Amino acid sequence: VYSCSLLAVGDELLDGRVNDTNSEFITEKLEPLGIAVALRIIVGDDNERIGNALSMALMVSEIVIITGGLGPTEDDLTREAVADALGLTLSRDGELEENLKGFFAAMGRQMSPTNLKQADLIEGAEPLTARLGTAPGQWIEHEGKMIAIVPGVPREMRDMIENDVIPRISERLSPGEAGGAVTLLVAAKPESEVAESIQKALAGIDGIKVSYRAMVGQIEVRLTSHAAGAELAEAEKRAKESLGPWVVAEGDETLEGNLGRELRSRGLTLAVAESCTGGMVGERITRAPGSSEYFRGGVIAYNYDAKERLLGVGRVRLEEMGAVNEEVAKEMAVGVRQRFSADLGVSLTGVAGPESGGEDEPVGTVAFGIADENNAFAWKYRLPGDRQMIRQFATTVLLAIVYFYVRGEEVGNVR
Ligand code: ATP
Ligand code: MG
Image 1 (tube, rainbow, N blue to C red):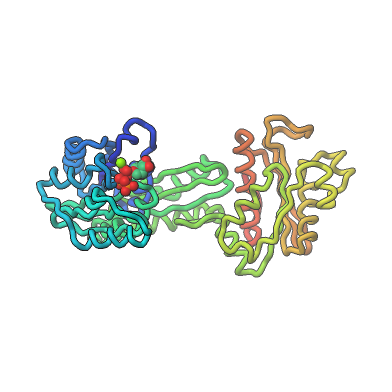
Image 2 (cartoon, rainbow, N blue to C red):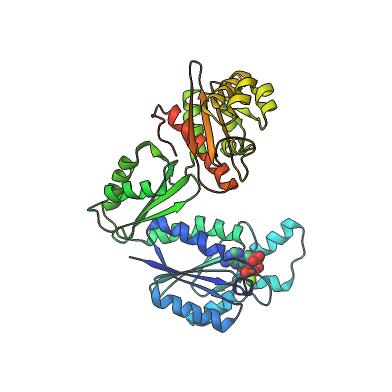
C-alpha cells in the first residue's frame, strides 16, 4: 500500500494569504488510486526548510508531490532545494532552454536571463512539459521513491497532476498494491438514512472506508479501499442496491448531466417554472453542455401577478390557498409546459425565508410540480436550512424528481 506526502511551497501559503487548495486537489486525484495522503506540509520559500520538509516526507511515504516555487524569481527555490536535499546536481537542460525561448518568442516577449533557471533540471529527472505556463515540472525516481515537482499556479498544477503525474504513479503501482475508490452521488435523501442503508449493506465486508460529504440535498458517498481485491466491487454493488434510484450519479457525473442524458436519449424537452429559486433551476440545468438539445427555457414567476399572467395560475386559487401548495405547483407546471411547447413542464414554489412573505406555510415549505401531456403531479416538502440552503436544496430536489420521473422510477418520499 502506497502513501503520499504533499509539500506546498510558498510564504503566501504560510502566512495565510492564500489557501493551500493545490493539496486538496491532489488528494482528490490520488483517492481513486487508493493512495492515502500521509502528511501535508506547508513550507516557506527557504532552501533549508524545503529540504528538511522533503526529508521528513520521504521518511513517511513512497511518493512526494511538491507544488510551488518553480517560478523565475529569486524566491523560487524548489529546484535547488530538492537537488540539495537529495544530493543531486542541477544543470541547465538544452531542450528546456529552447522550449522556454520558443515560448517567449511566440508571445512576442523579451525573455529576461533570470527566466533561464526554469530550464534547470535535477540530475536524472524527467521534465514534465509546461503546456499552460513557463515552468516545467520534474519527475524524479530516487532510491525507490517517486518525487514530482509541479508549479504552484493552480491551473498549471491541475493540468500537470492530471496528465503527467497521476498517470506515472498509476503505471508504477503493481496490481497487488493498487487500491481504488468509488463515488456515488445520492440525491434528496437525508444523510442519516443514507448512512444507515450503507452500513447495513456493507456489513461483513472488510477493508472499505466509507466517507460522506453532504452538499445540500445531495450526498457524496465515497467507498475507498487501500488494498486490492474484490471487496470494493462487491461493496459498490451492495451500496447501489441498497440506495436504488437515489443514486443519481457516479464518479465525475452530475445529477444535471445525467438528467440531460436521459432526456436526450428519450427525445424529451423540458421547460421550468420557478419561484423561490429565482433562476437557480435553469442555471443548474444549463451547466450541462449540450443542454440546448432538451432545455426549452424557463420562467421566474416570483409574485402572484407573474404566476397568473405568465403561467396562467388561477388568481382565485392564489388568493385563497396561497402560492405554496401542490395545486399551484401543478398549474405552474402545466402552464410552462404549454407556453414552451415542451414535453415536460416542471415547477417549484416555496417559502425560502427568513420571512414567510405573506404565505401561511412555514419557512422551508416547497411545492414541486411536473406535467406531461396527460397528467400533472405535485409534492410538497419541508426543507431544512437558511434561505440559501433551502433554495439550493429545492433546486436539487426538483432535478431529482424529474430524473426519477423520466427514468420511470416512483417519485415518492423525496426529501
Ligand atoms: P510561477 O512563478 O511560474 O508562476 P511557481 O511554481 O513559482 O510558478 P508560485 O510562485 O509558488 O508558483 O505560485 C504562483 C501562484 O499560485 C500564486 O498566486 C500562489 O498564490 C498560487 N499558489 C501557489 N501554491 C499554491 C497552493 N498550494 N494552493 C493554491 N494556490 C497556490
Ligand atoms: Mg512562490
